[in-house]
Length: 456
Image 1 (cartoon, rainbow, N blue to C red):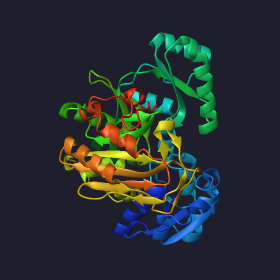
Image 2 (cartoon, helix red, strand yellow):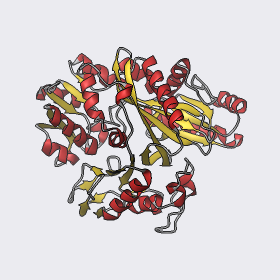
Image 3 (cartoon, helix red, strand yellow):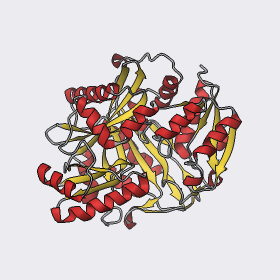
Image 4 (tube, rainbow, N blue to C red):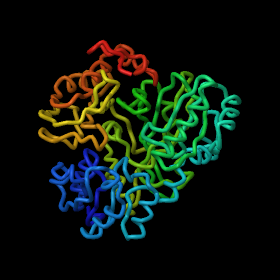
C-alpha cells in the first residue's frame, strides 16, 4: 500500500527509526533530517535520502523550521511526520507544512493550537462533560489572583504552565507562604521554555495514579480508544515506567474512562493518534489533565497489548484512507511494561550522563522489544534528551511480564555512560510495585536497594 511517495521524518533517535520502519512496510520512501551530531545515526543509514539541517543544538537543527521545510522541498517529500517532542505539537509548523503543500501527520493546526494551551483544553473538556479537578478555566493573571484561587479550592495546589509539556512548568504548593515564589518561578519557566508566560492553578491530588488513554480518530466523528496506560512511576513529573493495563482499573472503569477520552477528543474534531491524560484517585474517580496531540514515547505498550501499529494508523489517517477500525475491533491481550532506559545517574539525582557507548548490547527473547536509535560506538549527546532505549516486555499476565522485564534488564549491557537500568531492576522487584499498589509518590519515597541511596 502506497499512501505517500516520500515522507520526511522531522525528528531523531528511536522515534525517527520507528517511523521509518513503518514507512518501509507501507512502501513509502523515507527522508531523514539530521544535525551534524547525528550524521551516522541508524535512521540516516536506513533512509532513502538524508539532509543535514544544522549543527548539534536543537534550536539550530531539529527546531529550525525553515531548514526542515527546505529539506522537504529539495528531496521531493509530500508528507512530514514530526514524531514526539521538537515540532510535534507546534501548530505554526503544521500550518507552514500545509502552505508548502506538505501533509502533516497529526491533527489539524486549529485543533492542535486549542489543545496545546492546557487552560483552553480544560475549558473544552469540561464542555464535553469530562470531570476536572477544582481550579481555573482561564489563566491567572498575577500572584494575588493565584492566592485567591488557592484559598478557594484549598491547598495543596499545583501551578501549571498553560503551554507546558514534558514534565516542565509545574510547581506544587503546600503552604500559602510559598505561593508567591512558586508563581513567579513557574511563570519564568513558562516564558523561557514555552515562550508563553500564562499559567493556571488547580487542586493538587496527592497519592493519585497517572492514567492515559490512547485514542485514534479518523475524522467525521469516527474513532476508537485503545485502553489505558498507567504512567505513575515518575520522577520530577517525567515518566520512567509505563504499563498496560493498569492494576487500578476494572472492566467498567476502563470502559468509562476510555469512552470519556474518546468523547472529549471527538468533541474538538480531533484526527490522528493522541493521548488523553487523567489523574485517578483511590476512590476510582478520574479527572482530566491534558491532551497530547501526537504519538507518545510509550506508544509501544499499547501496540503490544492491542497488536495495532499506531504509527501506521497515523499515516493512513493523514493520507485520507477511510478509517475502518471500530471499537469492537479493539481487544486488550496480556500485559506490557516499558522501561525508559536513560543515560542518567539515579544516585546523583538523575544527572545526565552523556558520553561514548562503549558497549550497547540490548536484550532479546520471547516477548521482548527494544526501540533505540543507538548502537555500540555511538555517542550520547548532551544536546538532546537522555533516552537511549525503550525496553518493552509483554506476557499473557502482569507477573510474567514483570519477570520477563527483570530478565531483560539483567541481560541489557550498556557501558560507557551511567544508566537507569539498575534503578529499573530495583523498581520492578519492589514489593509495592509488584503488588500494583504504587502511585505518583512512589519514586519520592523509594530507596533504591541497588545502591542504598534515595533516588529523588
